[in-house]
Image 1 (cartoon, chains in turn brown, cyan):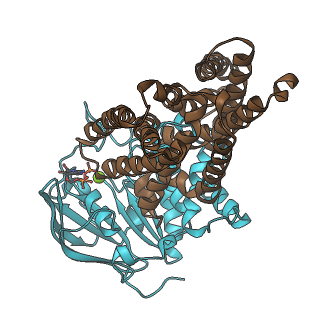
Image 2 (spheres, rainbow over the protein chains, first blue to last red):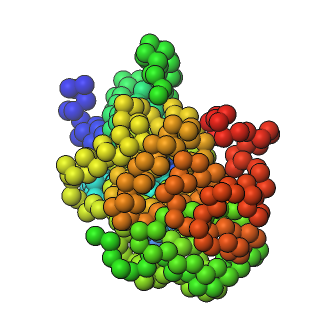
Image 3 (cartoon, rainbow over the protein chains, first blue to last red):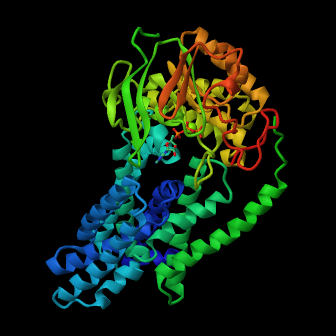
Length: 277
Length: 259
Ligand SMILES: Nc1ncnc2c1ncn2[C@@H]1O[C@H](COP(=O)(O)OP(=O)(O)OP(=O)(O)O)[C@@H](O)[C@H]1O
Ligand SMILES: [Mg+2]
């Protein structure tokens, strides 16, 4: 582990991995609770258009990705809130539009090709430039800030939207907040695991910690721990064995899930049966 | 602590759902300290009425006031404790009973202000009032349907509101717990709290109800003293179907979990 820290690129990669492992499962807990586990995937597709737009306009792709994925997330949330049956079809259209838009725009960009997009689709954590680490740090702070300030309200909202409204909570604002926070998280995670695997970091650690916990807060905290173990563990092993870090991170997370599944069974079986009144 | 303001005032209230009229002109007002039961057959619009009174669904005609204000401009939401009609509580992530009940304090809490001792005490009292204090740190998903219903009641109790709005709080709840709820509610009514609840069988709640509103096809067809002698079965529009029994009719004594 120590020799890893001698390399500049590895230090940057480790910081990015830690931040992503911390933030993605935290917001993911609310998305799983609201049964929006695939929202991250949707935003990921849309973010691809943002990346391509960055190359086309000569702007930093991270910034255009933030812009476009936030817009996409807001659009998805507005469609969802309408609550019509055509909602998931509309979402699907948005996803396809995101990929097609990305491929189209990148081909228009000078010297751009689908190969340019590959590092965003599958992640390229070992080539994260310093300024991207700063952007990732700021976004991660913003996401954690949102959770600290609005966590209690987001909990009520994700339990029952109607009760949230009858408690005087700003339901529309909070729903948009979850969507925008998810979009920011997707962009943070894009460099680490790639847009196609972003959702895995938002969902798998939550699914893992669910096997072992009984409460919402404990599930969220434990999933953040599992998230960091997966990203740092995956990154470290990819340093020693020549494999793409994004894929290893997700495999580590999934292995954790399988282990927790067995452990959870065992814990529940050995726990004394509660008496019901 | 109770004000002289009328709690709910609906005049000519109309609601369409999917372009179908569900409420067709409701006039209803509830004064502080009243204990009103809304009765009626399945699909008669009881839940819709309660949602419209709280401003959770828009009216397509008429108007409704919450403490003399249109719901959109109402600000004192801590005065309302709402128990929705739900088949199950929770969602994709486990959550403890205490977490759910404590979240009933939300309208009294401020952003960035940590949970206070008063919050914790109110949560503890609410858990005790529904007889679930000993299971407070169990996941709510592990409870039976009737127990989950009691968690929702406790969440409303924890907020210490002036007005309780409960949609079938006794559905699927055993008679012992119904008695416990009736005791809790009668103490609250004595303190001057307002109760508006939907029920199919009043059961142990009957003595504390001061007024019954019976809905039929989107109209109010009875508004007055509760039908003590006749019982709800004799009311017009009551179709003798238990709210959540799908296959066979279930007697009120033969309790089993919903969902
Ligand atoms: N979201 C909805 N969209 C369309 N129609 C609806 C919706 N919700 C309810 N309805 C219709 O409105 C009518 C009244 O429903 P409501 O839920 O108010 O009945 P209820 O009196 O509460 O019945 P129950 O005793 O089963 O709870 C029903 O006929 C129902 O089909
Ligand atoms: Mg109903």
